[in-house]
Structures are given as structure tokens and as C-alpha cells.
Length: 353
Image 1 (cartoon, rainbow, N blue to C red):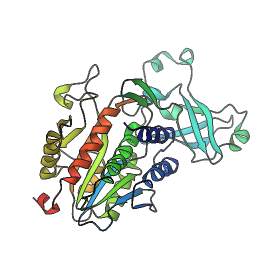
Image 2 (image 1 turned 60 degrees about the vertical axis):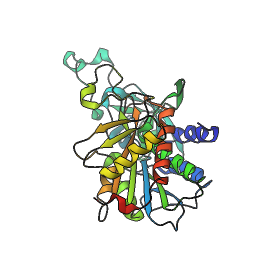
Image 3 (image 1 turned 90 degrees about the vertical axis):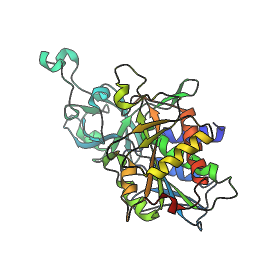
Image 4 (image 1 turned 30 degrees about the vertical axis):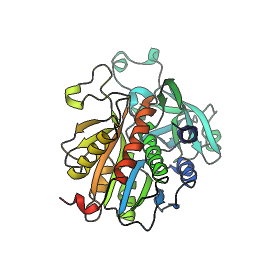
């Protein structure tokens, strides 16, 4: 991966972006896109758009959602503890005892996610997962009055961990789901910006609020009105203990992007992705999904009168935990596959079934 791209990814992964609070990450994404796009903009919802070849023949969309899961401050107790609720699918198994940043108007405040110590739990409680409603954020203040000087109701929090290299191209970070998808679509756009014979209008979008219902994909796909749309998200690997490969597919880090086949995907666009991957020796896997995928692809496919849609995913270990793991080789290959596929599109009428 080019140094400029890696530096951008590192900067993007440092930001916080719980659903509805994506502004800081979106600003980093837009700043990077300005370097090679013909148009960069936002909308009332918070989606970020980067456009190449605005006068192109057909409209092609790529999306990756930039929001992540998190916690929201719901109330402050008399003792100054912050009671919280989940933003998106937060796993209570992994958050107790973690350091967090509460993101306030004046900047991040360090806190810890507390619960009763194991010594204070009743015997039957020890075998159960502590519910989020029975946890709190401790920011080290004396009482509610002191807490209210620092934190407001509706502030959000994220686990206080960052982006680090494990080995080779393997990296760990909070929120790869799906800031790595938002990264990938703008990287594909950067690759396409170097092409001289790009005939179509191509829009990369960092969508918002996917974790609470694909909301940014609904509004942005309506705005772009694409003929063809590619959603980029993460998918579970099956290269860890206890995962059924017969059910989930044989998905490993480093084996390349995962191309989905099923009713959420236009069959001719699937065929083109597969052919492009093979023609360009891009490593890849295929998975079958027998219904809607629960990704931006759902919203794109159903936008307006319908869109020829595909889903390309990046293998990810430990999804919705603070230690998500991906291979940057898979990310590079995913961006390359998108760019090569878009360059091979001759007429969008080829995808009419």
C-alpha cells in the first residue's frame, strides 16, 4: 500500500464515528478525496460524496459506511456516573472493564466502563453476561454537578483503543466495520482518477448510520440515482476456532475480497466481478447469501426503480469488538477489483435481467 494511502487510513482509524456522530471521520475522508476528485460534498444526513467525471454516460455508485458502534450517555447519576445505551450492535461480553473516550464538545474525556467486581457478584450473576444497563462510565468526578461540567446527555463514547500492526499486512483496530469499507471505495476512486478513458460518472460515498438501519445508504443512493451500485463492507472470517466453514464459507485473512452471490446481487454484475477478478489474477472468494444481506447493498438495490447491485466484502476477525483484525492486502485487492470492474463496464443496459 502506498505511504499516502496508509497515512490516510491511519488518520481515519484514529477518529471516532458512532452512528449519527460521524463528522470527524467524514472530515478526514473528504479532505483525502479532495486530492483527486472532481467534486466533494456532503448532505443534510451527513453522507460524504466524492465524484469523478460528473458528465459521464451512466451513474455508478460505490459505498462503504463510515459509522461504527458505540455508547450514548443517557443519564448522569447523583454520584457522577454516566449511564449509557448502545449505539448499534454492541457486544456486552467485551466492553466491561474497558477504557473509553467520551466525545464531548470540548474534546474527548477519558473514562472506564465499570460494573460490580466479581467479588461483589452473587453466585448466579457470575455465570451471566452483565447487561449494558447495569454498566456505567466512571470519569473520576465527585458528583453529578462535576460530571455535568464535562459531559452532556447525548454525548457518545468509544473504546479507547487504536490502529496497530500485528504482523506483515495484518492490522488490528476499532471500527474496521466499516471505516475500512469507506477507505476502500475512496481508494478505488483514486485508482480510477488515474484512468484516461473513464466513460461513466463514478461516485464514492462514505455512508452514515448503517449500524442503526442502513439509513445513509437509503438517502445517498436516492441522491446519486445510480444505474450500478457496489457496496463494500466487512464479512466474518472462518479461520478462527469454532466457526463452521460449511455454513459461512472458507474465508481467510489474505485470501482476497469476498464476492457475494444471491438475490441481493445482480447476477450479471456478479459475473462481471468474477470475470474481472480472474482476468486480473486478483485473489477472491465467493459466498452465497440466500436473502437480503443486511448491508448497504440492500438499500442500493431497492432505491427508486431498482439498481444493479453487488456486494464485495473484506474478511474481518472479531467483528463488533475493539480488536477487529483485517489484512491490508485484502483491502488493496478489493479496491483494485472495484476499479477494474468499473473500467470494464461498457453499457449499464448489460445488467438488465
